[in-house]
Image (tube, rainbow, N blue to C red; front, side, top):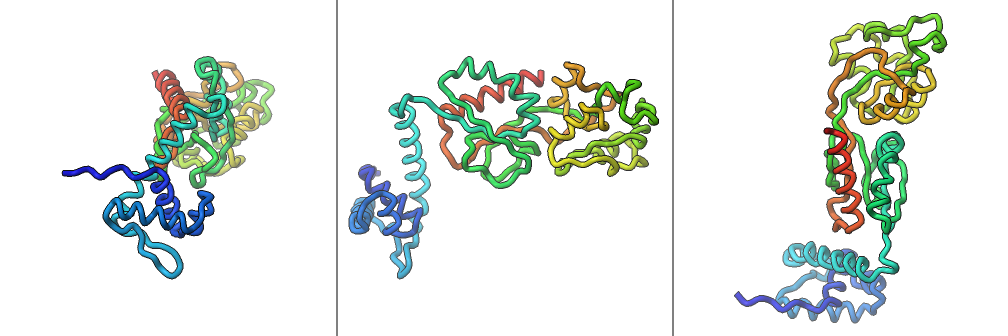
Length: 304
């Protein structure tokens, strides 16, 4: 079988832009060319490949079957070439990595470990933004730290935590200076009905899930104070305002420091976890892969 000669890069760039815009005029404006030049390059590409790539319509373009099959490889190749060009010849060869992270995960798990990453990758600048609610893929972030079951469209996710749900509270709650002085501190799960429960909206595995798993069906799981972020609920627990349900990966540093304690034993294994996620439709740049590999390694070390 005779191999086709590789077309000129300019022709392929014109084809990719025209296929994306479905319009020669818009493709020409993006590439700073005339419409006539775009049209001429597309005709040259079609001639070399031996087939039509576009169906010309009164108000735009439609891709032929051959074009639909060809465009993913062309687009991926152009993107990879852009990435490697930037990595090799980019200004000062430095990179800024944008990480969008769950706030409480950043404060209690990621931040204490970042010195190691910065020591090993001093040429990578870091930029962190926070997320509370998960929406569509954030286009500005190179990497996201998400909480859930790891199944999000258009994302490749790797698990970072293997948690148990545990009740936590301030030492004040078990001491003589606890806020609800008329209520004895809880010694068992059955006594939780006498105390303020701190809830986090949006988490499937909350107090209701925990109580059901441990067989405590008579306790009202809805009473207490509700928050839209786990970091707020944890801070309220530290301040002695009630009992929160935390993940072991999040609570470990607060338990070690003594700011929080477990009022009694009772852990439930979670199905949800924290994940690192990257877009599945973009080439993985070197600095993105460096952080991804590092944080996955940190998660494995924390597990064992």
